[in-house]
Image (cartoon, rainbow, N blue to C red; front, side, top):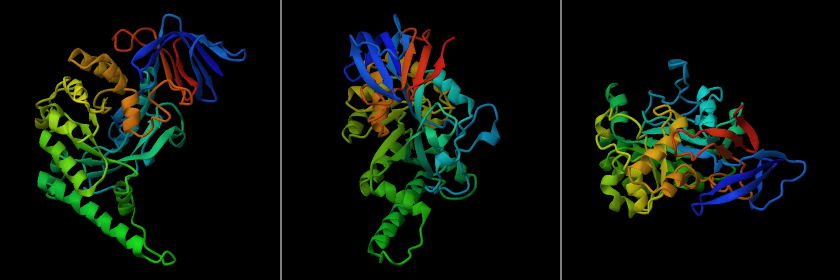
Length: 385
C-alpha cells in the first residue's frame, strides 16, 4: 500500500487542482483520493509537498516496441511491405518490451501508449494499448486488439507504386479497402448462415475485419490531407463502422465539416518538419482549433518520429498556439483513454482506476519540469534518486 500525501493533485475531469491532496494506492488501484485523508499505518508514504500530481500521460498513437531504438533495421517490425491488405497482423507479436524507449516513456511521465503497425499498407494490422512498464508484453496489455490500422495518402502509394502493384493511386487505396470490407461482409454472412455443427474454414484476415464490422474495434485511419480525411470518413459511413482519424494534419482546414461527424482526432506528430507534400499545412494550431469546435482531440508523438518522452512538450506547444491548457492536458490523459476505450482504467486520478500516477517537480507543461516519481499499476516504476 502506498500513500501519496501533500500533493497538488490535478483533477482533469473538472480541470481543477486538489490542494494538499492525498492518494491511497492499494493492490495496483486508486483506493481513495481527496483532501484530509489519513495515510494508513502500514502504507509506504511518498511526500509530494510542493509538487504536482497528475494521472500518467497516454500517447494515443505510437509505434513503441515495434520500431526499436539503437538497433536499426533488425528492430523495425512495423510494416509488412509485401501485401497491402494485412488485417491479420497483430502488434502484440512484434512488441519488444526491452526497447529502450519504454524506459524513456516512464521517465517522461507516459505510463500507457497505443502502439501498432505503420502506414505502408492500406490495411496494416491490429494495434494494442499497452502499459510502458513491464518485462513481458502479455502482462503490459490494457486492450488487445484496440484498433485496425488503415492508411490513406502518400505512403501506400509510394510503397506499392514502387513495386508496380496496387495501390499506386488514392483511388486504388480506397478500392482495396472497400473490397476487403465487402469480402468480410460476405464471410460474416456465410458463417452466420452455416450449420454450426459443420466445419467452416477460418480466415484470419476476415475475422479481423469482422471485428470492425461488429464495432468491437474501430478503424484507425492514417490521414494527413483534408481529402484523405474525408475519404476515410466516407468509407466508414458507407460500412457503418467506427473510425478514429490519426494525424489529421489538415483537420483545421475542414474543422466545421469534421466536427459535424462526431469523430475523434489524434493529432500529430507536430514537432517535426514538413518532410513530405501532405505535411504542407502542418501546424501546432490544429489541436486547439479542433478542440474549440467540440471535437475530442488527443495529441500523439508517432514515436519514434518524435521521441515518446516529448509528448508533454507537444501539448505545451499546442497551448502556445492557442489550445486551452485544460484541453491540452485532457488531450494526453482522459481524451486518449476515452478514444482508446480504456477510460474505465486510465486517464484520470479516480477511485477504482489503475494507479498510474506521476509526481512532477513543476507543472508538466513547463519544459524545465520532470517527474520525481512514477507509479504504473501501483508499482514505483521510477523514482528520482
